[in-house]
Image (cartoon, rainbow, N blue to C red; front, side, top):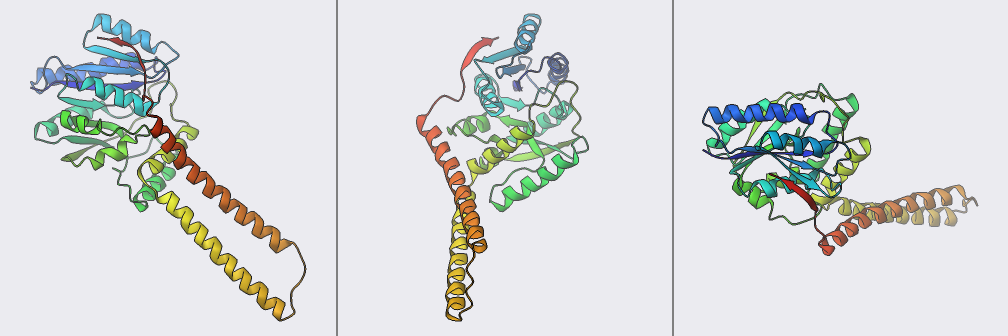
Length: 313
């Protein structure tokens, strides 16, 4: 029997964490009772710099139940780094790791099915939502557009999969060999090449608290995914430059022609429009290239992804 560690990144989740831990521990104990897991299986919560009572809840729960363990970041390092830290710690003793968010919008009742697929030799099991009824029209539409865009850019993602998944020990160890600081986990894992499968579930609304991914963070996360896994935006800048150059050549031919025909009219409208359009192209180009240079600078500095302040258990 294998040991399972459930890794939960948590940021200001005091309202949902007690019920989340209770439900996940019950699921884990049922699997132990069915002799699908080792009795040392546990739950690891990574406190991503919370400002509320999240860490206090983890500490209090650990005193009552030693199967509940915790890592505390010195500050907020982000959801993806919390996942990496949790997996890095869990794999020291675990044979298999399941990652799931603290709000339990991803159905934890899918975990037993994941474990059964793991026991048949599957290294990665993706939790995939089969509906988006709980999402707004805007979120559903942008999500579909995002997946289509990434596919066009050559990035292969598992559609409607977030960060609810099972990974074997060797799959996690391989993932941890990717040392880049701007690590887009859900885009890297399909590249690992291990045998994988899917479990479908219905996503539910949050039990309590607020979403930790407002529109601004969602857009930043989407851009990180594109820029971390593809250089297509830089190529798009090149195509934009070629297109602008072609327009310039056409404008030159047109200007010479009307001058030769004696039809040239003195004015500033066409000139100003050209300046604004070309200026916009240049600013977009500089912004995209600057984003990639910034990421290269971050990678070159080799700063740690996170700092662990305290451990429990």
